Structures are given as C-alpha cells and as structure tokens.
Image (cartoon, rainbow, N blue to C red; front, side, top):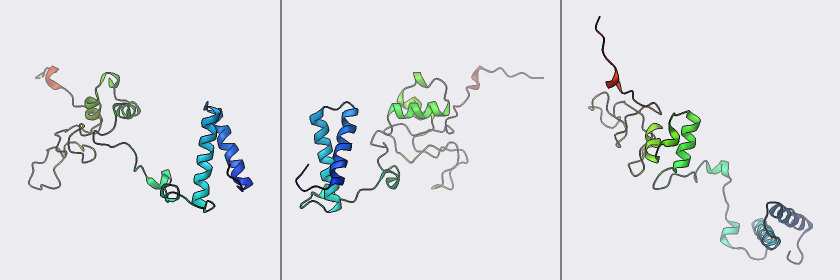
Length: 161
C-alpha cells in the first residue's frame, strides 16, 4: 500500500488479496492484483496524484452495456453458444450437429453469410413488396421456422379412399 493511504483502502486491499488467495492465486500475484485494484479505485475517486486514461475513464456496468460485448464477432456465436441455446430449446440430435447445422436448426443465418438477425422463416420480403408470398426473409436462403425443422414427406405413402 502507498504511504498515506486511508484505512478504507487498506481494508479493500486486504479483502481483494484474501479473495485472490482463496481462489488459488499465489501470494505475490494476489498482492499485485490487490494493489492494482486499489490504485485504480484511488485514481477514479481522485485520491491519486496522477492517473492513466484507462483508470479514470467512465466505464459502463454490465447492465448498462446491455450485451454490447456478447459474442457476435465476424463468425457469429461459437458452436458451444449455439449448442447451449439448442439445449435450452430442446432440439433433438444437437450433440451430433456441426456449428452450421446448429445455426440452421435454431433458425439463424449460417456463419459467413449476411447477418440480419435471425432467419424469420417463410414470409414475404418487407423490402420487396412484389416478391411472392412465401420467399425466405433472410438472404442466406434459410427458410426454416425458428428451430422447427421441415418434415421430409417423401417417406409417406398417399392413400386414396
């Protein structure tokens, strides 16, 4: 702890250090984590003489960010993220599916294709009012309806009465 630090900051330092040690961090690393945390708090509150831009920058809390950092990078969500969503929705056969198959079963655009949100199934295009009534909304061609796979009717025999 720096000389002249308040008792509140000393308590914070001990609390952070003990927490890091309980998580299995070495004593030296725990001290480093605790001092960096306390120094950052001192900089934010104006107690420190000098502070870096990153220490004083007003950061949003997780609820304020509203999912800004949720994974939606260039290749979309990871296979594990898609698998977990498929598990929540109860999609059968999900453990044997590839990332692309999971995306299709969930009604999403496959990775690498234009991402306009979720594929919304068979409806007319809003941008093209002259389009036929049952064309896919999504440019990726995915016409599935939100996790409902299409039924293969070729196996059924028609019976005439």
